Image (tube, rainbow, N blue to C red; front, top):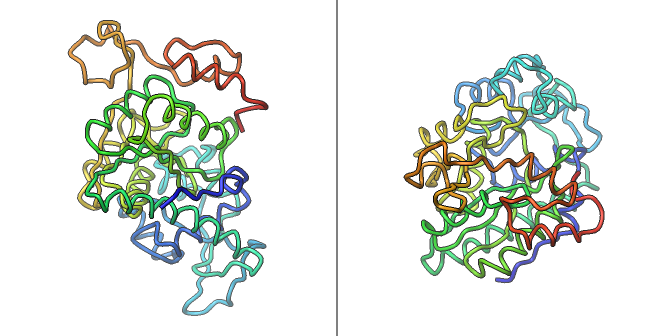
Length: 340
């Protein structure tokens, strides 16, 4: 099966269509353990079971949906912003970006609704894109090969490459599998993300590494979202899923390794092997990027590979010492901004 991704479609996703992406993936069986929007009792059940992932709910009064009248099959309910911030994101900060995104369409929800006719082609495109990734994975597994997913939404530096190389030692094929849903300001644009990883694949990795994304929404919910991501990768057919030092977090509200510890403790529920990494550093003794704990040298010999420093270097078109020089020069030649 050949790769058949609609890259133009993936590059144009924005926040207005987040509910439609969720609808497409609910109906496409990408989430679990439910296949419908939650009512209030379902919301309460999700709060009690963080390993279920993200509670997917339908905001009321969206222009893209038709809503049935209140009945046994269609219930309305309201939530408090503090319940959302604490229940989903485990923070009291109602100004946290994840909370603001989740509540951007209001705090009233419906347990059912159907997208309007003109939205159906968009839903079909989301499902086609994700089914393409799923079928590509299935084809690899037909030859009894194992396959690992690495979610990376940044221009790769040596730390990312160290993680990929570690995964290559565990699985036959490593798939760079970023979520290509709507981005927050400052995120790498999808076309740049794709181009940089494909550059590394072409020039260094070859057939053992692929760039096959998935279209879904990011929620920035830390441990709960790491579970959500593990479920998605399990449903796509991966054998392994890499969970990082601050997986699905933002604004430093989660502790390092909080997400990986959580999903490892609940691994048996996800039907996928979790590979946790504690972050990658440059070891002055090894003279290369290593995953923390993977080399015998002392902590004082490890230099942090800073994503924010790397970003500043890219913005100023200056070479960052902990990233591939040729790749950076390739990025500098790109036209337009590479950030949202």
